[in-house]
Image 1 (cartoon, rainbow, N blue to C red):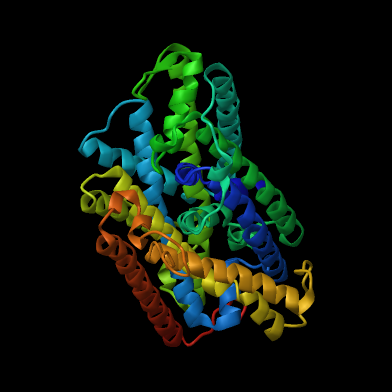
Image 2 (image 1 turned 180 degrees about the vertical axis):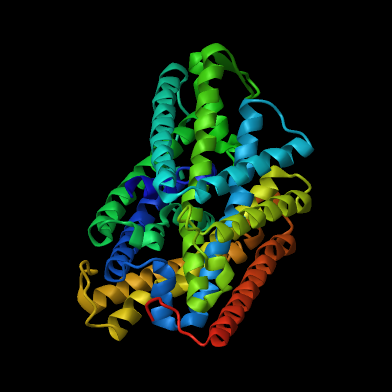
Length: 486
């Protein structure tokens, strides 16, 4: 379970995005760890131990707000994974391969994306007794690869010096906050994913709280170390969301063979090229296992919802051979493929533009679901007061209310600044233009960016409504009630 959560929460795709905003990213990491990560971990620990059933987040939302809300919420939670796998993870994997191995022009870029997407699907399709080793391997590769990068960056700093970081660069600002809060909070979510397969665990009530605590601390360290190293070895103007981590890898691995030219270009040779290639392969494996673990949780929860009448029953079938929801897994792969093709076509192959749009959409679809999930803690305290709770958020009703309110408001604010970058800039004496907060690849294209976020969200909500209508019709036709907790 610890390995599963490490793969879930240490998503390598956002390291460059945080580093691109400079040293204040580290300060906001610390602040958000205290005001979001800690209460979020407590909230999930109570819900997952009080209601340790398959499809946990769907069931929590259903019990709190009814099946209609839960159905739409769950479709958004599930849909965020094909968006993420076919968007952010896919473009990063292909870019990494091209950077460290050989180019994939035209058709070959599409083929590389298809290989990555369907390798993810195969990992999710694997029987649970086999598939559980994928996050274990992913966690090991992450720790090894990021640790090796940090050590190499220290050696590089000793040999070549480091970039000066002034105290003022660490000063938190509102502009920095609205730019960083989406990716930082995205780094910190995923505690609820194991609860989607709670009935596969031996003792979820004992294991989940400990895994949450350990993973929260581990995620903070595994993010903070590499981000600090990137800031120390690369000039600020060279760091961007798509290539920041990869550029830093290339630069620091010159200590084993290669050189950094005066114009900033890097040439690797000998052992430097070999070690960088190994690190790049580890990075791609890390991206792949992130996609597998999130899809494992999201797909299984969607299958549970379909079985419960919140979607087409046909999609909820669990394969007796594999013990996994094969039909929903394959549909996720098809949606990821469509996402990849659409993103490449609509952005004309602009990798950074593709990355920015896909990352924003993946975060917003995920966070919309938390807007309903987090208040479920206080609602279920009121509706089910006698339910045994092996772990409870400290502070009684007030503690539960504070935890739900703080986390809920943060994710709500995050959704707002994703849909309208620059929200609040120029208010109450703050300086700057809201348009300056648009992703660099969408500079001067607010309408284009907004449409890239809002239209897919509306389409996903419509799918959720359709799923609910179809599922409800099938239940009435069969004249039965689902077997799940009600």
